[in-house]
Image (cartoon, rainbow, N blue to C red; front, side):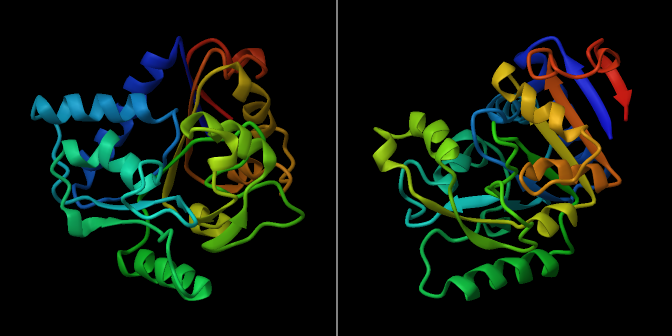
Length: 253
């Protein structure tokens, strides 16, 4: 696991965009797993700027998003489909038919989840999966639990997650109580993973990734088992790590 500690959020966003750009330069037809939430927004702005400078081409890329709220249509302003269109996809030359999302509206939950897994397999698997991390250690919407759920599934959101996401809605009551998300194995099957974390409120969750213990109560700890993970964190999010991880640059764990 590579750990890159940046001075601030702006540097984090720039570095993350460089890493994603490098993946597309190496393999233009890459399958990228995208994440929503506030942390990757800066990276998406950097990617748009690079595209406008004609430094990067997204036309051969395919995408799969981590998750979606259950019950929200794609047109809903707080759906993750709408988020990705607003923050990235509508500003670059990604082909619409190459954009994939788990559905927020479905009649058969089991079939909806299996269809998403089948689509990822048909695309050849995810080359680079972008992740954020919740204050409770969740990745995607895989919440703390007694066990890991392996594949795409429906999950009831933890109260901490609802409270954290309430800032995007008019009130906490408007936040959906469930989501459809890639499972832990779905995430771990990606060939490489890029996890972003910013601000001191993520410091404890980041620290737990390096606990040496894989614990479904802290889902992100499973990343210790992946052969190719890069963490890009700012100094605030790295504040509880061992001193060797707080010096900036790249450390290997």
